[in-house]
Length: 370
Image 1 (cartoon, rainbow, N blue to C red):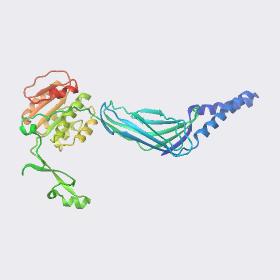
Image 2 (cartoon, rainbow, N blue to C red):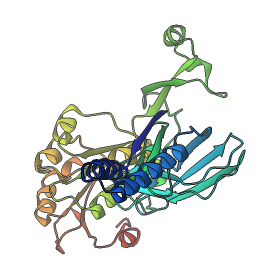
Image 3 (cartoon, rainbow, N blue to C red):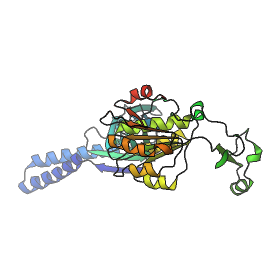
Image 4 (tube, helix red, strand yellow):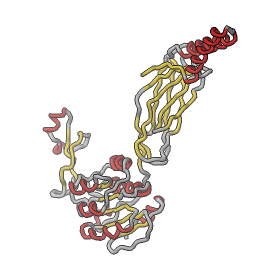
């Protein structure tokens, strides 16, 4: 908590004006300027007496939820408790939200009383929105002085892409439509994925004793069925639109929630990730978090598509109709190649399923296996 007590610009002007009036009154021998100057000084003294006592407050601000789809509601809930006996008035809350200031005037706070105030947060722009620091301002009725206290630290509201429910991304293989097999897949099709903490019901034969001894926590090997096809989603960021990001997120999340591994290639590192064959993900939250930070870039998708590991479905989301034709060059490496076209069309490309899209709500109706 940080505290400052300052004259406002009006307070400084009043002080300077009072000093000038005093000087003029004494120099010219007129009592009127001295009387006016005295009034200004008394007003400043009263303002300082109003704001000088440090109020005993407990202030807590919550942001809920911390992660929200673009366009949906998120609010800040402010809890203010007056732990003193005296009532307080003239309290204002100043909260920085992104690059703007949010100002709320609190009603009178009685002694040992509490107030809860909520205010909406902007979620129309995807990305990270810093909320805070929270400043509690107490000012006098004349606006001459104010006392500012800072409470807590800034938090980050993450505005994610919007998504719509889709079926499992269509593929040429039957098992890609029927859903994933269990982690206890037949011998020869499972592979090590990661280590995680033990939960009740895990097979003790999968305990990794060396890591458990090192961390002090029982760790088990998480095995996945390597025969599951991967859904590779390539997002063209050269002329990035929110519709394109929403479509890519919808496709990737649909596959991840069905239990299939997903590889999302977007941004300036997409080509490097494609060459490095980054590990596929199956966590919808991690996918949404990553796409929430997608920004326009200059990297073309041609090399990304060529370098992407084959197998499973390739889904290219782009606003450039020419990219659909380029994607046809890799159709033999994938079970299915789909191009979600958010720009001018339509386009017909042999071997590529082209889905023209102008509204995210229309994607579930166009997203059907053929």
